[in-house]
Image (cartoon, rainbow, N blue to C red; front, side, top):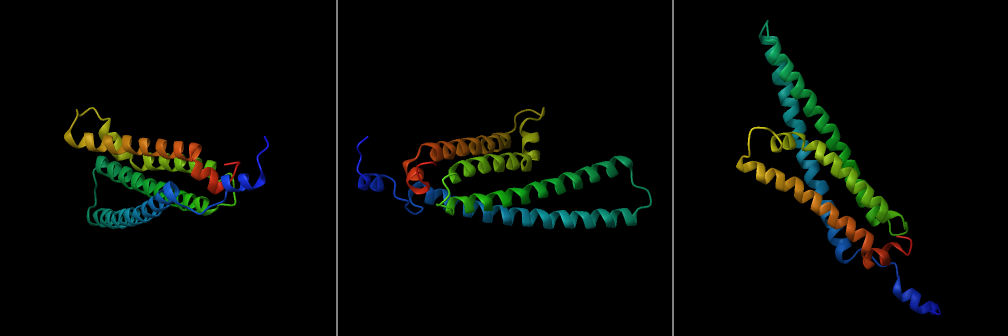
Length: 178
């Protein structure tokens, strides 16, 4: 390989975030803001539900055990959902940090890894959604939309994984070891 040094520098300059990377970066910012708003609303609803449950327990001397179990299950599931959501928000923030870190050639691999961990967190967050999609109640019209959302996220993550592994823009931005 008798490639002059000037040609090598022209092939892989560490350019800024442009093209598909810019689209990915803007999407991640919007996704982060959307999830913060979503989990902020869920947290508010959870605290209102908690206060309603406490008022109900205080106003009635005897609560049927099946209501007690259902309310505890609902509160526990909602609390776990919020914890998973806040971890997902943290992962989205880390993805943004690694996208901006052009000096680290391992950033694309870390972005892909965090993106799939975030997807698993989203699946846990969509727990109720998945239960209703795969329930034995038959196929309802809104199940198609819910299943499409989950399947669309898989396709979206696969597309970005392919992009980070095969894009010359990623190669040029993060260096030869990307």
